[in-house]
View 1 (cartoon, rainbow, N blue to C red):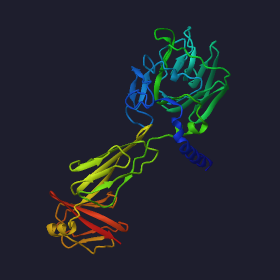
View 2: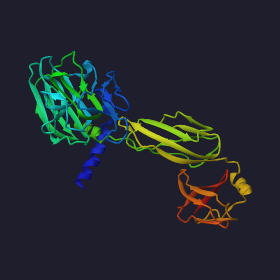
View 3: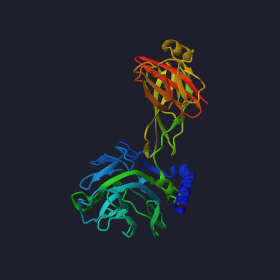
Length: 413
């Protein structure tokens, strides 16, 4: 119970701080298909690293490094190397074999403080390969380092959320929303202006001296020019993809324009709408949160929404939308097919005045356009169907016989 209350409180706190996470954000890398910086101009140059599945199983949404010769270069911008910083990202180890010389780490991120031999990390986060513990370091102008080690090991094929923050006063290492190490620092970190900030590689030169390559994967990189708060770290750890959902008017007539309303969870920031079949359909602002859609023709349509945010795109949701001609359709249906329902309103028992067309199909939809039931008519004598499972409300019966599609409205009381 205490654990549940703790998680609920974290979710509440995370929601309160969500809008502040853009403050001081210098660079952000979603890795959704590329290594572009989504908030700045520090676009990554990919050398060998390959796109792979992220922690949610989405393809081409994280970068993996082979431990031999892969890296991503983020450039030399001073914006990536400030006196106070926070670096937040997700990482997992995929192997222990690593191409290295005189350096005992799998590097996640690295930039140098000096051009002297040895690493001389201005800042570094990685995994110490002899203990598999996450470590982080920063240095002053004289090579003095403050090195933090996590309590947790970086188990293979397990995604870990890592935040490394440092100020002039102290350093902080968080792993999976827990403060793993806090150390006194007492100096300003120093940077080598000509050196790049690199993901997946650490050292002087690839083929000699001190170097090491990452055997693992990285995702959702954020670099801040300030110290993140405890609450903001919780928000980043709890951040997840949206759960796509939407609603729409229960009654839509051909030629009408109706608003479809996004009801997705987990703070979506992008929306992609589509309709099938698309003939006669106009989506106004198909990438907006609540678009208006016009259906020129009566029929059955599938409307799909895919909501996304900084973490990625959630699973698409598709709902069935029934569009009526709204010109005496019920009467027209009865005249053409010779069918009518009685009684209507009904107690759920669906009775027809004559047998249903043989080999026809009957679908039942609710007012949200969700399909509830399908019957295949394989008897030439069938004139009754059991709809007792239907709650009170309005429904649409779609009868498909050959190329004919007809609609009858049903009220259950």
